[in-house]
Amino acid sequence: MVYIASWDDFVEKSVQLFRADPEKTRYAMKYRHCDGNLVLKVTDDKECIKFKTDQSQDAKKMEKFNNIFFTMMARGPEVADKRRAGFQPNSFGLQKNFG
Image (cartoon, rainbow, N blue to C red):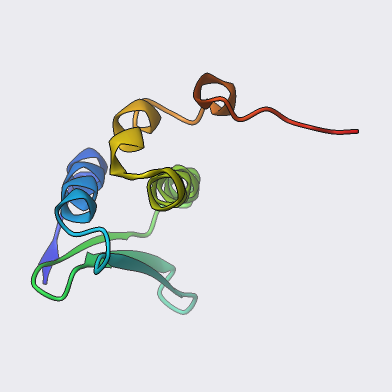
């Protein structure tokens, strides 16, 4: 298991890992309230990468990471390049239907 220090590097390596084997790649989140640590883990059973933080502002980054992975799982790995710039749902044809 390798802890990645930079958030951008973690996201990049996670997307590469998912693209290499989308069927086996999975991720998990773990929050320890007593330590105030959030750990994200992405693995395909061959390689495991982790990102650890104790900063509360990283929760927003984690939300964007979830959106990237959910989109890749639903629409395919090629969508990730568009999503990494930031969360902009209308740029991917996702329209809000409130009716």
